[in-house]
Length: 478
Image 1 (cartoon, rainbow, N blue to C red):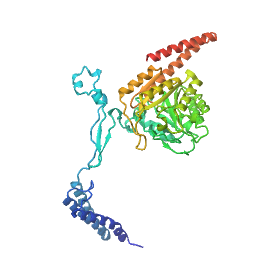
Image 2: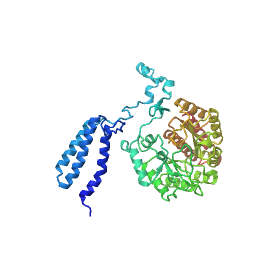
Image 3: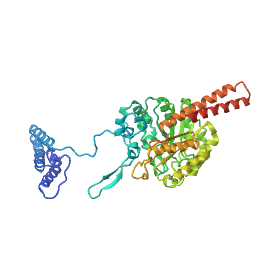
Image 4: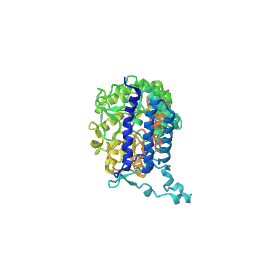
């Protein structure tokens, strides 16, 4: 059996050789690699490394003679020498705090403060994109920096009680969210609402792996994802009832490997949620089920309040942006079928990303087609490249341009339009407005039913029509 002393010597031999080569490199004429823990002063480095070698040798000798006191003293003196001669490791990060975008853009609200106007920038200059040179000398390249209006704070579970609670419940029940899987920039705002009813999370059903590979999406893809979790509908309903929300968004990955595309699983989840909390408003953001309208009908008649399906981009860009199995016309067919089945009893919704290279005329055509299909709500958001493997950003659209398209959508007759750089299809502000509309419609139906209870069918129909028109006028005024 080999003695412990020989084993220690063999273990120390590679370290001693490495240190000896490093010491020899300090005296050679060729340039040496300099690490953050090695001083740049050659003399100090040589003495420090020499002391380290002697320390390692003395530690081995000490183990044979069982005298540990001299080894520990030499080790502490070596550590003191290293800490006293090392320099701070260089970093590219600056210890600065970013101010809000509104603090340096001139606006009409700040006209009463001359000092603020003196420091503020005009919108044209504030929205100007910045470029920076990166890379080593001789091989530098120019990149466009992320605009200020797209920067958001990094959320922390310890910094917000609602954020931490939602995250803990999701992990405990084995649930997934599109907020995390798609790297949504609004996760801190939506999860960390001011109270429980304001916090929202978009639950992603049927796992975290999609059977399609859209060129803008960062969700994992696989031709054969894991099987569905039969307990997911109940776990999802339990989590949502526990959070005490007033409005929730359910979405899912595309499961083209399933015969029904997951439509029955989606519908069962909605029914479980409604059975546990009937007052909770449910929005379902679904796929196109490969154009199978029977599967669309199953989800539309499951008791949900808002049916959402995203066209993502214009018709001309769809083949380049989305998976080849998804088409613009197929998405329009899904939205039109839902409106045909449910009419005004359900709100239909879609979303379009800007910054992919779309033209103004293409956007106009897309909005007109959506109105023909009876879509009630549309949202516009900035496309942000998740990784270098995805489509590049062709343009960073300014907030003023988003406001312009929002007004254009409302002029075309959409019930509501949320538009902004960080707006997503399940944006919290849009949900609050839709929740208000749905509750007003429910109240109008209750009033109409009460008025027509003692009368004939004709009076009931007249009362319902009158009340609905009044609610619609109130919504448009908002």
